[in-house]
Image (tube, rainbow, N blue to C red; front, side, top):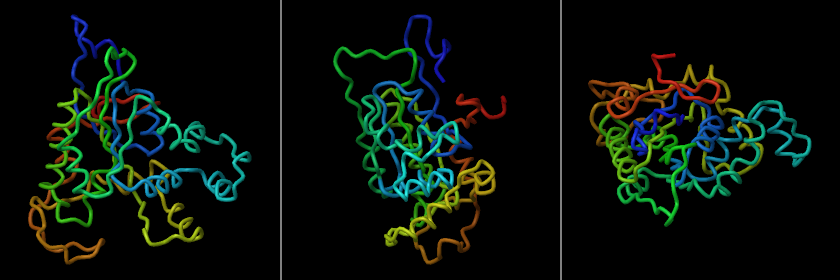
Length: 266
């Protein structure tokens, strides 16, 4: 993502615009972030750690998934170009010295974290030309679902806070929504039941296309009461697509062979 255009003639790093990567699978987003970020960078995961792991497992090929559950890690073959990333992803993120990972499992937690977000730059450290200090935000739309803030107003407030936090820390904001077809009942703990949920994860671009979270219609204002189920919508008046809300602050880019390209120019 970084090139000579990211630097001004006086050697200063140019500010990168807030960006939404879409469509993108979770493993591809993580791999892109690991390859293109620079110190200091932060990834905010809008879920609990366990849910994040289950989502990641949902992107594994079926044979790899069953070998993992059986404990036969040595039997896992590199059947896809990103298999090397999928199995040790958590370890890769944890071992990264330049990327901090934070889990915000509720909307109030996310809002509180963004409101006080700062980064500590190590004394004497210098940015390299191979990456961009980044604030990653993973699955913010999913975090708003089932809350009174599942609206253009609520989502807009979160995006504005994220843009402000990234600007304050001199980082590029990078957003991705990778939750298509993935829901997990937090009360289900048995392996067989968990496997069913994992296998329901979206693992193809075709599934993302038919379950595009950015095409969801949102009420303009926050809903004061939540009396409808997850698949039900009451009368909410005028609506707007989630993508239009994000486009107020962000540009949309698509991944092409590991490189981000502005949509409309590819």
